[in-house]
Image (cartoon, rainbow, N blue to C red; front, side, top):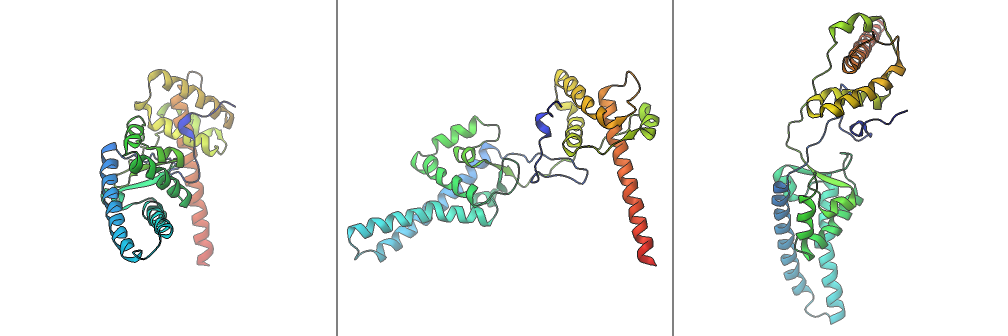
Length: 269
C-alpha cells in the first residue's frame, strides 16, 4: 500500500476535534520566544544573585573544598533543578512563557515530561548562559518552528497557547454523487486514511496544483479499496473523497442516533 501523505501522521497525543480532524498547534514566533527567554533569564539571574548572597552568609567559615562544592550545588539548583521542576509541574510553562501565553510541547503536540524539561534546561544552560544565546538564536532563525538546540535535543517546540485554533470546514456532499453515495457499500475507514483525507480536503487552497493532483489520486486509490461499487467513471478524485467522507459521517451519525434512542427507550421502561 502506498504511504500516506506526510501530514497524515497522527499519534494519541495529537489535538483532534470531534470530527476527528487533527489540528496544527501554531509555533511561537522568534520575537515572543526571545521576550519570554529574557524574562526567564532575568528571573534566573536574580535567583542566582539572591542565592549567592545567602550562600556567602552561610559558607563564610567553610574550607575551600566545601566552598566550591556548595557553589557548584547552588548553580545546579538555579540553572537546572528549578527550571526543570517548573516546566515539569506546569506541563511546559516557565515564568516567561506564562507571561506571554506560550507553552513547550513535544514534537507531536503532546505535553512534555520531566525528561524533556531536563534536557532543555541542561542544553539551555550551555547555549544561553555559557555561549550567550548565540547558538539558540541562529538555531531558531533557521527552523520553521523557531526551535533552539535544546528543543532539537529534547524533541520539543514552543507553541502560542493564546491562539484561536481554526476548525476546518466539514466536507460537503457533491450533488452529482449523492445518489451513488446513498447506495454504495462503504466500509469503516482506517483512522489514518480518514484523517489524511479530511486534512487534504481542508487544505486544498494551501497545496500547489501539482501536489494537489498527486495527493488526490493517491488518497482516492486507497479509498477505493474500502468502497463498492466504485464511483461513476470520470468522477474527480476530490469529489469522490468528499462523497465518501460525508456518507460515512452521515451513516455514523444515524447509527449513533439509533443507539441513543434504543438506550432511551430501555431506560424508560
